[in-house]
Image 1 (cartoon, rainbow, N blue to C red):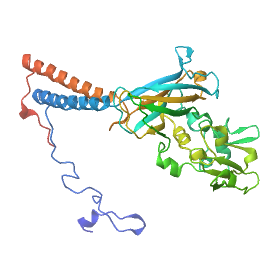
Image 2: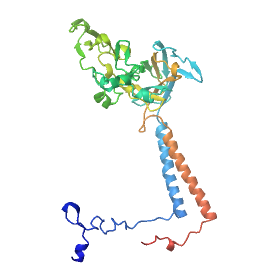
Image 3: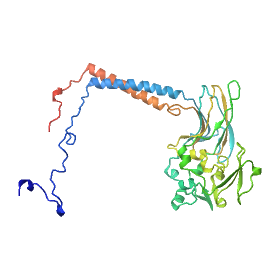
Image 4: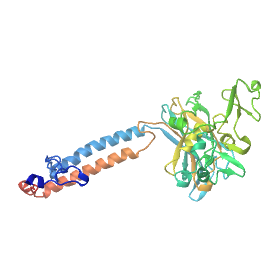
Length: 385
C-alpha cells in the first residue's frame, strides 16, 4: 500500500475515507487569527486631549438640554396627603373611599403655556409594580371573553367574585382604579376675558392598547337612538344610557347582567356602559407604573394659555390615599422634545463634562510638573509565534 493511502482513515460503515486535516480552517490570516491589529499606547498627551474634547462636547450639550427642560412650564398642587406620619386635608382629603368630597384647584401660570397642555394626576407611595398586583388580571376577559380559566380566576383572587357576583373585569388593577372626577370649570385671562378652554379626555391611551388589548364583552347588545323617548325596548332586561355631552341615547344589554358586575357599575362616575373597558381612563390605569411614585394622564388642552391666566379645576375626591400613606396631586404641564420637565439629563451631561475637564487639568499639571518617562517604543511589540 502506498504512503498516500496509509494517511487516509477509513470511516465506519463503509463511508468514504477522510483526511485527518479536512476539518482544519484554511491557512489564511482571518481564519488563523493572524490579522494585523493596532495596539494604541496611552500617551499622557493623548489622554489629556481626549478628556478636553469630551468635556467640550458634554458641557454645551448639558446646558442645551437644561435650557430645553427649563422651557417646560409645570405646576403641581397636592390636594390629599399622608405625610410625615400624619394625614393632611389639603382641600379634598378623604379618609374613606368614595366620599365624594369636592374642592377647587386654581392654577396661574407665570409664562405662556403652548399647546398641548397636559393634565396628569400624580400618585405617591402606591406600588403598582408589585408582582402580585401586576399579575392580578384576566387578559382574555379584558378582550371581551366570557369564559374564565381556573388559572385566571386564581390570579384575580381575591377580587374575582363578590359573593355570587362575578366581577368583570376582575383583579386588583381593574378594581382599584383611580376614580377621582376632575373637571375644568373655567379659564380666564389676566384681563378677565373668558379663554373658552376645553379639557379633552380622548387620545390619552396608547393606540395599540385600544386596538389589541381591550374589548367589550362579545355578546353585548347596543342600539343608538336619537333620543331616549324614541328608543323603544329591543331586548328583555335592557337599559338606557344618555350621553349628556352629545344628547345621544343608547339602549344596551350586557350578557349575564344579573350575575355579573361590569366596569360601568363599579365606576359609574367615570365609566359609561357604552365605552366600558374601552374607556381611555381605564386603559391608562391598566398600564401599570414601574415606580411607586408616578403620573398618569387625565386629559389635555389644545389651546394656548397666556401668562397670568387663571384656570380652575373642580375635583371630586373618591380615591383615598390614607390607607397606604400616599399623596394625590394634580399636575398641569407643557412638553418638550425630551417629554416633561426633567433636569437630570442636562445635569448629568454637565457633571460628566466637568469631571473630564478636571481630569484633563489634573493630568496636565502632573505631566508638566513631574512627567512619567516612557519606555523605548521599539521594545513594545508582541512576541512572534
